[in-house]
Image (cartoon, rainbow, N blue to C red):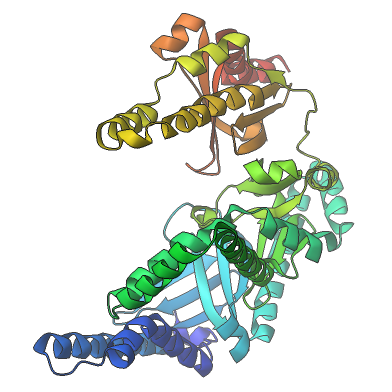
Length: 499
């Protein structure tokens, strides 16, 4: 690349301040523990570990400085160029037409300094499938998004000129679809989602971990003894009120976390792209092209099923962010009827069926006959080491057997001319919908036990990567064979030839 022919841009100097603050933040806990709570400079080991922490902190700051100093980017009409590297410079270029979507992220420190992080995703599955501008001014971010939008229009116009008969209607439809709000989370939904989340019980292991970490540096035995004496002397009512108070505190903490994470949640449609914006302190936005959507998943947790609350996520091809949790979640917790209304009105290329087929009765028998290695191993340990608590095994096996019965009742499926729809799970249930062109592979497996009952396990893989694999167990072999025949590429070839 010729640097003189391009206008090169650097990240703002405040980005360097931001990176230094992030380094200090990452070292905050060891600094507090070693220099505030336990400031021991007398022992040799204490001096070595403290000097080592300071050297690592200084080295990380110097590395961030050179990373900011070396980073530059430039654009022309067709390509974006990037020079980056901490100690060694690395140059790369990316054609603009390959960029499928732009995601913005504004953590609290970014918003405090008035910058935005942009991530550009392509449809590739490699290390260079995306690149980031970790800190640009909002005006610059808007300029880059406008440039990419112009590239998309040029690409669309070129396709129209090549195939005017097939693309005129598509272009006209895209132009007639302005930005439109599809869904916005209400305060009531966030509060209800916090109450129905199992995270309310996470306060106990989290508190235990924090106390254990502090106890490594500060002896808390005296405080524990006082708490233990108080609990022993307290009545059952007081202990019950204490537990309820802790759970209520956990619910309040969960509400605060959910409000910070999902506050001002907006699901929008911008032309042929889905855009999700969320967050109060850390504001993020993600775009998914309609053409990249491979499947739709609906997830229901055990408690939220009682309140008809579901989560909806998309399986999208060609994005490296699939490895991140909730990367394609478009509705985190919404009433099922409202979620289905959004899906049916705005994702019309996926057709949902209301009537699904249940598994045959012999599927319940095979589920109950399968060996639960977890149950047998745990039962053996309890009977050998903790025989006095053996009666708890009744509850364990009731949960195991109940889960298998629930899995039989819940599991359903349907295959139409174009679509496969699955509903699987026991305590936590998820529904999956995709169509034949988006299925990459179908595998049929059969164990010895399934062979005796004439049942199979079918696995569906879409183009969204290895995380987009869905499995349904114990369906009739005849139905599995029908799915293979339905998916067969030979049928498509014969249809094309006959046409």
